[in-house]
Length: 158
Image 1 (tube, rainbow, N blue to C red):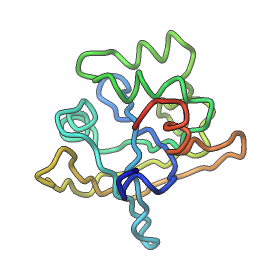
Image 2 (tube, rainbow, N blue to C red):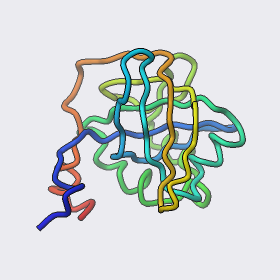
Image 3 (cartoon, rainbow, N blue to C red):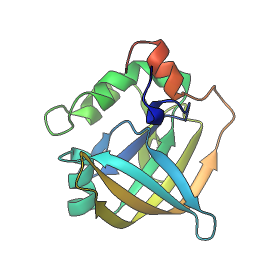
């Protein structure tokens, strides 16, 4: 039997953060929390390149709504640390990057949302809660969205 927090079949995202290059992770704890202004909460694992980039380099990032085309990226982006694994080189080598609003992003996403970091809340857990304001966004009708259940069905989680 699954835990209550694993019952909901929610979208899978990647958060692109930037220093001298791009780093990406996998996010399943993403929630829009306000319409005016448009705000998102995103839980990010502690001690990650994502947090280093946001705290040290650039407060802007891009939330990418993944499609089923991205199933093969779950392990390299979600199970490998950007501190030890050069995700930008991996994605470039595999021709998976494009540009949107001057930001490097994954090809074939359903949507991009440029985010501005507003706050980081230490949860005293394994994730920190990040609050973002949406600056720009664009949606595309090009693929089927990648969902939490897809990760289970393909043996990537749980």
